[in-house]
Image 1: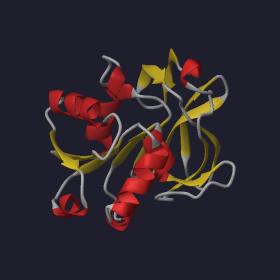
Image 2: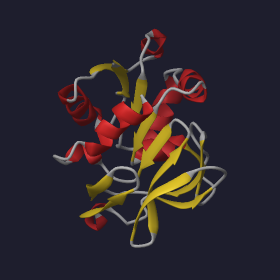
Image 3: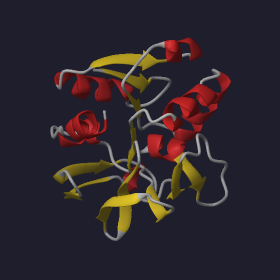
Length: 187
């Protein structure tokens, strides 16, 4: 199984290490031409969503990413990746890919000092460790977006068709159950 990881900025290497440890082959998406390859799934990693959004647009990757996701390719989006995927960002900021029917609140837990770790139940997966770093959360789901997890009443994991979006960073913890779920259930 070949998984493409958006590698323009952020925590892409950490995702690659987890996926490779589970037997997946990873390719990095750094420029438009990289999207011409065949792959079975896509990871939109954490990092700086504004920078990532600007880069995918400048590099000419935005439309092809949208096309791939709309065609049904499985997507795992974490933290900034969730912001890239959302169709609405709280406060009126322009959406990037605009494909996940949800309203996302950026930096919902404050700055770096507001980062934290907890464990919580993710529907269909079980209890998982959750590392939040300047994390967003989902203020509101729309359409057929399913809520998979909440922490302190805030939505931190959702699924919509082929898209799994998380506020936290599963690639930073030893537990591999999120990535296993992505590979086995979505890909």
